[in-house]
Length: 142
Image 1: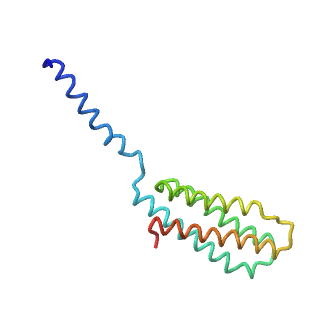
Image 2 (image 1 turned 135 degrees about the vertical axis):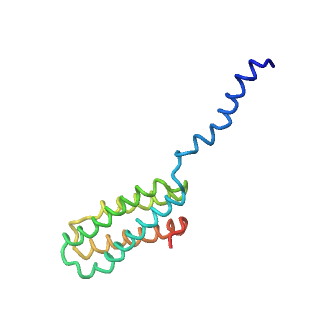
Image 3 (image 1 turned 180 degrees about the vertical axis):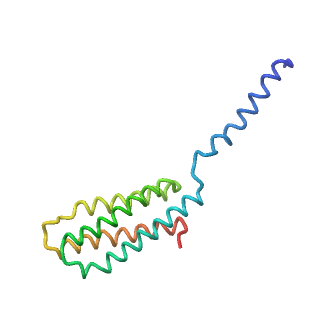
C-alpha cells in the first residue's frame, strides 16, 4: 500500500471506528434519568389514583366523578409521555397499560346509574394501578 493511500485511509478508518460512539451520544436518553422521570410521574399518578379510589364513595354526581377521572387521565397521558424514554419492553408495557386505561375510561357508559359508572371507573383505575405497579417495579421505582 502506498503512503498516499495510507494517509487517506487512516482518517477514514478512524472516523468509521468512532461512528458507533458518535451515534450513541445523544441518540438515547440516559436510562437513569428516564427512570427517575418516570418514577416521579408514577408517584403523582399513584397519589391521584389513591385519592380517586378513596373518594369514590363521597362523590355524588357524575360531573364530580368525571372531573376526578379526567385528572387521572391527564396525569396518565403525562406518564405515557415519560414512558417513551424507558427501555424496550418496559416502555411497551407502560404504554399498553396507559392505552388500556384511557380506552376503558372512554368506553364507560355515562348514561347508566352513577353507582355503575363508579364501578366501571373503579375497575379501570384499579387495573391501571396494578399494571403501573408492575412497570414501576421493573424500572426500580420505590
